[in-house]
Amino acid sequence: MAIQLEKEIANRVETVNQYVEKYLSAMDLPQGDAISELRKSMLYSATNGGKRFRPVLSLLVAELFGCSQERILPFATAVELIHTYSLIHDDLPCMDNDDVRRGKPTNHKVFGEDFALLAGDALLTEAFLLIADGYSDTSFLVGQLTRLLSEAAGVRGMVGGQAIDLRAGQKKFSKEELTHLHLLKTGALIRVAVEGASVIAGARPTDIESLRKFGEGLGLAFQVADDVLDHGEKDQDQRSFTGIMGLEGTKTYLQEISKNTLAELHKVSAEAPMLEYLISFNQNRQV
Amino acid sequence: MAIQLEKEIANRVETVNQYVEKYLSAMDLPQGDAISELRKSMLYSATNGGKRFRPVLSLLVAELFGCSQERILPFATAVELIHTYSLIHDDLPCMDNDDVRRGKPTNHKVFGEDFALLAGDALLTEAFLLIADGYSDTSFLVGQLTRLLSEAAGVRGMVGGQAIDLRAGQKKFSKEELTHLHLLKTGALIRVAVEGASVIAGARPTDIESLRKFGEGLGLAFQVADDVLDHGEKDQDQRSFTGIMGLEGTKTYLQEISKNTLAELHKVSAEAPMLEYLISFNQNRQV
Image (cartoon, rainbow over all chains, first blue to last red; front, side, top):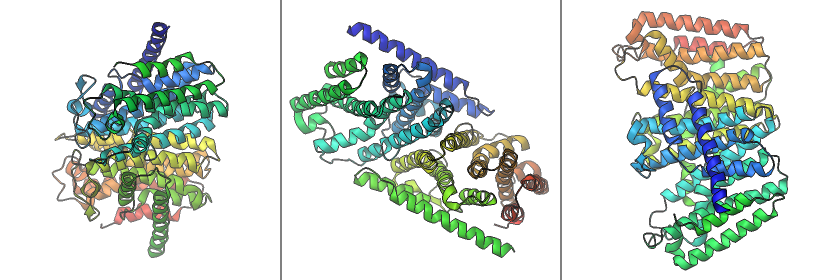
């Protein structure tokens, strides 16, 4: 069962990989060597072996309601481009100053800080063009998806979470504060990958609401599971759940979130074995 | 006549100033001191005494067709927020490394490079939320405006122009190449301020097309006029029109662009004395 589901997910990762690469390679851009180089910078980070967690989630959710991959891929790709831009900007020297991501030099180490900054800006902007072009036949969708994406990605979501993280310093977080941080910094974009897909697929409002909570819970559960896996090295870190609650307390919290997330999924009017699998996989993962 | 028109424009600058400040101050944001600080960073650069050239153009164009200020202000503000974000990112040490803008410390000198980067990201993202929320009653507009804005702001427009500028080095530009650079780097956003406003105002397609060309021409004419004013200090600069064509050649080019831009404006089915004034004002300006 698990092996079969892993294969199913790997297939969808490949579908996303192909679409992202094809889309960015085919963008109709103005002339100039510099613009070609900027495209390369965008492609470098958007095709560097990421897990495609968010766009695959979008595909899986869309399938629940019989929505085709072709229909969901522009949105799924928009979410992934926003995720990619956030990583490029996060890696910059004025932020986390990381030289390596996924075993390869970070964007600014290859293309320079200026082009890394611009590649991030361009990917974020392109995400909204993907929405406008991808759903132009159903214009109310463009409005809904643009609103959902901008709320999730901007100061009301991901960027707001980054701001909290940057200014945390030596602050001692409570469990609630750390949860708030993660719900914004990473949770918002994971949630919108699920919510937006359910909207495109034409899910009924109660299903959209349940899936929205599922997405939010799954995103949070991934962060908590990361802290469980990194315990030991992070136990003194006041921005880790193990630093706040200890290993056992964090494991209990992970179980609680996973259980609630699964309960939301069970409210959905369609069977969702692969989404269930993601919850239990995360709960038990060793990497 | 000129004094009256200047007053009319000053009134609209004030309208934009009030709307921008009110909008950013009233954004419903998550809790947290860091997010409050990020809002301050966004406000600092968005309300630092800019000329409001782009949003005022949007207002003036909308008025030609009887479109209210209330209707056009969300779009006009979106364009201005994108302009603001581009200035914040341009000023960063990895780009132009400027300490002062409009007589005040640049954003990163006040809030740090990390928050300047995030403020820029947040302003760009918020621009699309303004579109989605501002025109949700006319959903086809959201799609059109999102497409126009993302094309004008991203790698296909402004960001593409910035890339060319950054990689220009000691390259000797031709007149055509320098024109291409300016049409992307600054022209695209000025053009879209005009084009988007005409779309919102319900202008007929032929008027939209003429206004689009007017916007593009006016944006270029401003750059050329800047080079005329800065001649002397820029005469050896291969990225200035005076460096390429000399002062007289540049003045001739400015006259030619202004004439063509005025001709486009005359094709529009409405009288546009204030837009005409902008062309002649620019042609003769001493600052």
